[in-house]
Image (cartoon, rainbow, N blue to C red; front, side):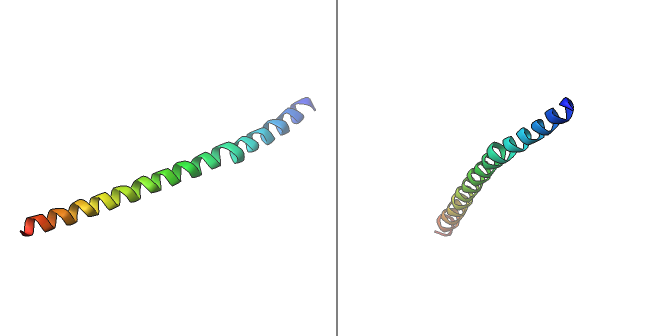
Length: 57
């Protein structure tokens, strides 16, 4: 009976950790990666446009 109680408590604690700590942390990391990707894309487009305009003169 004690093993079953400890198993249930361990499972509940594991779910608590996953939903309260890991998922928000992963969402935060995804947002940061998305922001870095957008900034990189804008920089790439800016460098491409400036390179093409300076090459044409």
